[in-house]
Amino acid sequence: REKVLAAYYRNGTSAHILIDREGKVCINVDYRLYRAFHAGISQFYELTSLNGYSIGIECVNTLYGKREGPYPVPRHEWEAYTQEQMDAVGEVVFLLQRYGRIPGFMVAGHADIALGRKTDPGPRFDWQGLYKKFGVGFFPEKRQIQNLPDLRDEITLHRFLSVLGYHSDPNIALGCPIWAFCAHYCSELLSTEMSPGIGATIIRCITSLYKRVDPITHQRSHHIDEMCENLADEHPGVLSEFIAS
Image (cartoon, rainbow, N blue to C red; front, side):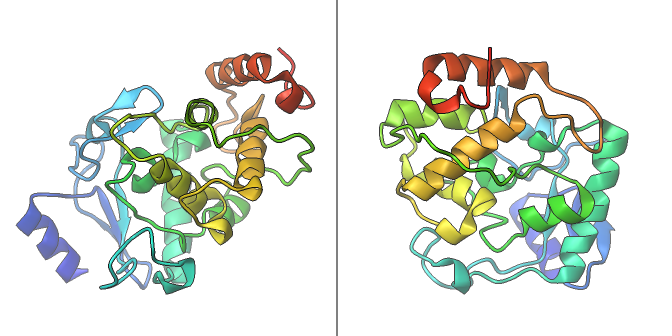
């Protein structure tokens, strides 16, 4: 933890909350009063420069160590998070979501908001476990997907991923949002190239978001519903089974 704090001061960066390997929670910046400098150039849905809109949480982890990466590094070579860390993250994020009225789909990793530039928390971060145990964040329901769109087309892929908050940028390689999505929702399929399994997971995420009532805030996002319905109108054969506009 001390090395991480020293790196913050040395690099001019910061996070509101730091969680060490033993699950100890250190509040570095009062998130009620000040922004922390953890996101940098970033975007999620229509929000940009997310230092001004987010609460930054970081966990002590070496990610992929000294290997040259991140994209060539397979999932099993990333450092795992301890259960103590994951439990601490779950408890902290639950409280932030509950009292800040933050919907689960707005809980994101740095890799989700800074495509191609940030990779944390990486593919060993247990998003699914957090959702199952604490109800925090968002993770798709298991459901059979019969019809898959051809998401190898860049414009179509970006259109689908935009419903999940990922933005398109002509200066960012297409493999970056694919990798970030995999690291968050299907790390066992970690790749920079599309596959039927990744495509099916994207559809599961979108259809699971539709008319979803958040288990913590008990709210539903009509903006997300509208995005899903517009996408269903564009691709009726794919989404009409789950989404009706």
